Length: 454
Image (cartoon, rainbow, N blue to C red; front, side, top):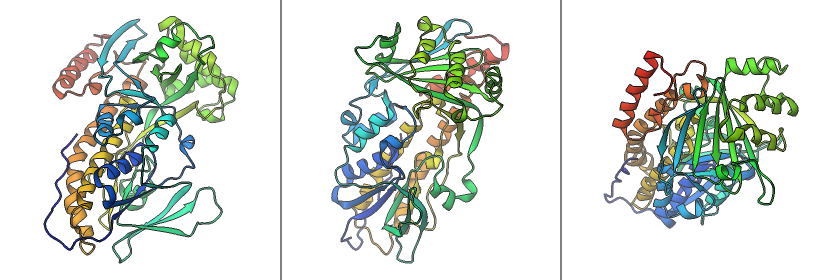
């Protein structure tokens, strides 16, 4: 985390209206930014969220890891307990090497500030804390322009519509947090919009069992427990994410060569997308991967049997991608700043993407609120925002973003290098720099001499 940049409080012509702030995207970062502005600025701001989805049910994915940096951000703005009311507190991240049938290490977590959440429930509970923010849904960003008035004009197109809505909204400030494929980043930073592709996929699944239904041995203990586990096998790394309420998110990670091998074993042509495979074959593929995880009396294999619909949106495969962090994440042409995945998409290796984005949002919200409550001037708004808010914010956040992106890349062998890895790389998960450095040296030595585990 970083200190919130100071805002110049010198005397200027007093503003006579709220600072109009548009937020692009209603994911964790967009909602947190709005909540922070409501908390810190009150009626000094007028906030509107624009989102492409019709509601939270449209969001892909089944879980978020809400780690300490996000939980503390929510705590600062007074919504932690309400937003995480359905979260499952975590005490431990366990790394287990199935190839040696040995627990390699555990990283302890503070259950007050580390949670696993069911994605849609979390977004519902987070959005429910909004009080004055207006949410405009089912709208795509068509274009951002900077008229001579000094405003930021956002042109909207109806999602799925045949023609534009012919609607443009004007703001004093725009916060873009539309995710990995941010249209704002593509428009304003065309030379810095490359998406980096990596040689592995993660297959996600959700398994739920009702309270009165029978469940496999250890299911309820894991689903309602306080630790998640990474299990490295010969071909894949299988993961449990306990979401409480008799619900487990499962994940299977594997590299491209392994995908082609397993696809071929099941008569699927090379590189065929997961979504195009028939349901029966999907189950067979998942069963093959699950068989590598023997812990808890083959619970992973038993969970595959409980998946009710292999064509469900809750069963999906993600190709792994990230972007380089924007060192200057704001437009020189006008008052637009990017945060979250729009500014620094991370690989999910550390489970920190949503948490980092929410920390971004709270810190920016606090700094913008101070500015909004100062005697800002419309005549010098652009220059003042860049000097007092955007530039100090970028200077403080870029090193954090760059470090975590690098750590995510260091952890890739945990998810894509099962055939050659000598054990998990745990160092990227350790937040204390000196301890992480010591572990990285030990892991380098381990890899050098070719031993498996410690």
